[in-house]
Image (cartoon, rainbow over all chains, first blue to last red; front, side, top):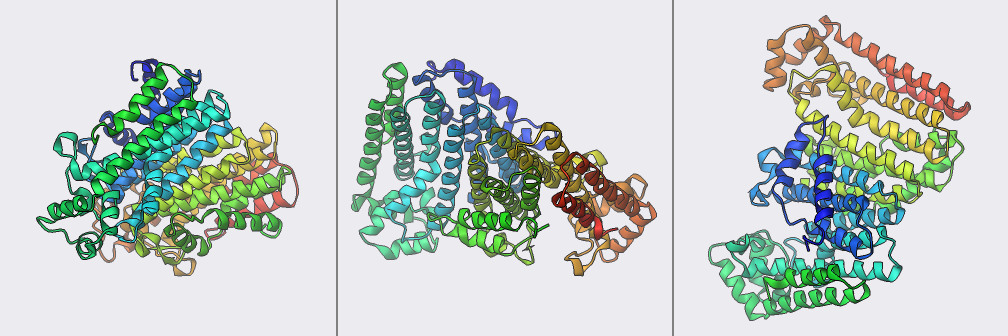
Length: 316
Length: 316
């Protein structure tokens, strides 16, 4: 995929580099360089560029929108780390730890604003509608996640809403905006939007599953979600089948002792929750691939199909 | 002024009420209702409505932009209170105290996103350019203020840049966007933008002066800025004329003891810094009024001139 989109990706990198600077406030490039320099997979810019290219648009405007979604994503990471009191991000100490929460909040705001400046430039009101709606859905999902945390009453519908907010909204806005920018017909735009939505959900469910099954080799520290009181899909499914006393103590009261993760793992396994979660992630991945039938054929479409396999490869 | 703009203001209030809600995340309307319910002067919406009305536009789109600037302002208040660890806002306990920092950060993000959704709706790319640039300038100013704090090397040029960011950028974007929405000619748009810029600077300098001269009757607690290590104009001017040891201890090291505010007051008075600061605020107010010569005559223009007097009335 990255080979197919190489010129667009290097244009995007140049825009990110240029726009994250600020002459007025030197703290800004310090923080952004720390975060952007650490890399990350840039899957969201890839989705914009791929979707636009698939529909015939490979110019500077596509790169601007690709940089836009990366800025929105980076801004939410900065704010998430304040909210979660994180200590690590992309394998480095997080910005809130290196500088302070203040800098993370305000530099995040700056990146949001830069994203909005960038998305205005291509001059498409429809694209602006897509991306500003996504920004609202993301923020809504983050707030919802906050109130769902440590709350055993959280159900699967709420979980899906949180996942759409925190991950799928920006994935689907990326593919939808790319297609819209390229002037694709309504059916194609909708197909690519739905591909992004399903891909994002598959990605997030797989990520939540890996918190139970993964290990340090993939950058996971099993049990983190339990300790944070996160109501992820395996827990929601396990709670529905019993042992409320255990979940009340660990999730709601936050009292997690040695051996509790192992017991929790036994409970989610016994409830069949891990297998069900895996099946759901694979289902969303399959749905993403099915959506591609509504998009133009070619090597970029094949690469998008591969991406849908890739996001669940670690759990399959 | 408020009588002249009454229909627009009630339309704006209805939009604010409607758009600050969220079905998905009940925490959002709790926080926004707390803050928006506390009132505030709504000077920024007034600036949009007045500028638009002056140029012949009094419809729904003007109210949408008025609600937009109020949302941006409210979002920055929520984030400022996290950054400053404030305990009060608009005479009530601040949101970060009533809920938590997380809610303030995320609900602020939600209001930013809602602002961007709203500003897209009138369909004017020029208005979008104005408001997205203002958002970036605001965030830049906030970061600059953070690094200027407790730093005696801060000069008047930096102070002005901070003031433009934290206050004048949204004032001038409000008046510029209102005129632009109404389709005013370039000269009128520029005059109203410059009016907003000068008005915002006059307002902020007066506010900083009141931290030295004001009292509880206007909601001020003299000496707050000194205790926070804020490099406001009176301090910058006083530092330039001596007593560096005192300022080093109080501002840079943050060691403020009983009697220090009185000593600081003596120092800024002796340096003539309060009078100079007052003169600057009055000068910006006069400049704001002069800019109105470039705008259409009538009762709304007269009300804008009165507003320029009003913002410095407390210090004149």
